[in-house]
Length: 168
Image (tube, rainbow, N blue to C red; front, side):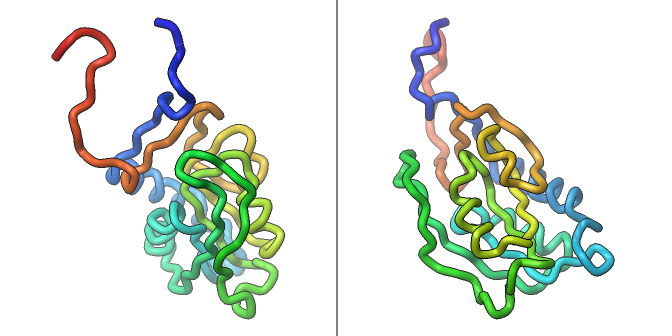
């Protein structure tokens, strides 16, 4: 079979159940790694993809202070230069010491460069990581190839899919 598929057609489909399991695995890896006897002061979710994993991590690690940073770096499936749309409460976050930043995926790392510029001492955790962005992440669960497009549950609907070969 020739590989003449578009980059987004090399897909890794993540269900809600799988995302929940992977986010709990991320929390398990983070347990005990925060400052002050392993506790984290706050979680900052990178919207929009980081919100579901951040909620799960915050619950599992009993972190009550949760905020968001909104960074726009994609227009559908086209990546562009990231820019911050909304900051967390920076008086509370300070330089990021004791803060856990959570996102669903690191792709090239450009979004995390912007976030790290504002919270340089925060711990960055993602559920999934691609090779180009992996150096920007402190903790992650699963690595996927750079040319894999991850389809998250909030991007999908249940529908018929034509088989690769033959008829159904």
